[in-house]
Image (cartoon, rainbow, N blue to C red; front, side, top):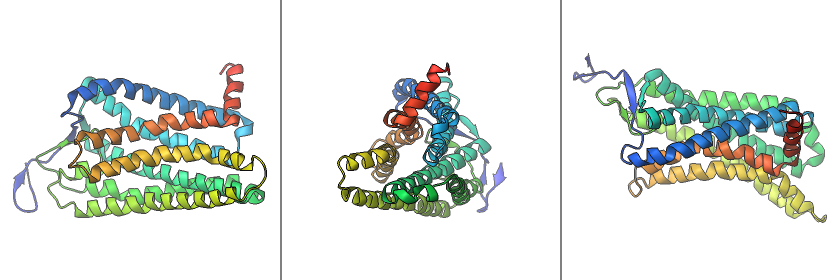
Length: 315
């Protein structure tokens, strides 16, 4: 028992419990199998893509290095969320320690922002490739990718670190049940006995600053790409140019569509069942991770050929 600032006596919380689909217990049953399959697919497909890019000399190019970074981010996000959700479904292991909860919160926020930033850099790569093809080899170099990776890691680490830090400094008393499958910032913060206005403002401002600026730059890049493509007069040039960035555009749609639906359901949370935003939040950490490498593997001839060569060698 400890005394809070206002003089009241309360029990300080030592751990959290994740209340995962308790309103819809049947969801746990029918979600566990597809989530397991998606996790295995995400790990297997991304590992195959990483090994292929690593071993195939023809894929040692900046575009594929960025794709490798995206695969690594996908795998970390997936492993941070889905195994814990499955442990809740199968073994009712709802308890999570303070440190594990805030670590999960940091990884989810930072790596999600890193993915968004990686898409932005990939959009710039496609912009240079199509709008300035002669200058592409001198602009998009290995050094550029290294600097971009440092920027992606540093920017999002610095801007997302305050999110778990602010939540971790709050005083938690009484309730310790998180109405979510994961340690989402506001799901955790609302359990606090303290004022969480700063947390809400930083989450809102930080999220829209990072993700919003990335989406604006991605949209600007593709607008310029589309304008340049429509000016091409050579036969088949338009189809070839669009084909080079089609896979990337599909990945952005996966990422942004689920994120947009998740945001809209939160805005209209009074009109949708409370478990729907939770489900979308979970799916957002596994569906893009499972589909991203498949889209690139199917649509990119160089990756398909690289995988085929590795299979012939017995990998």
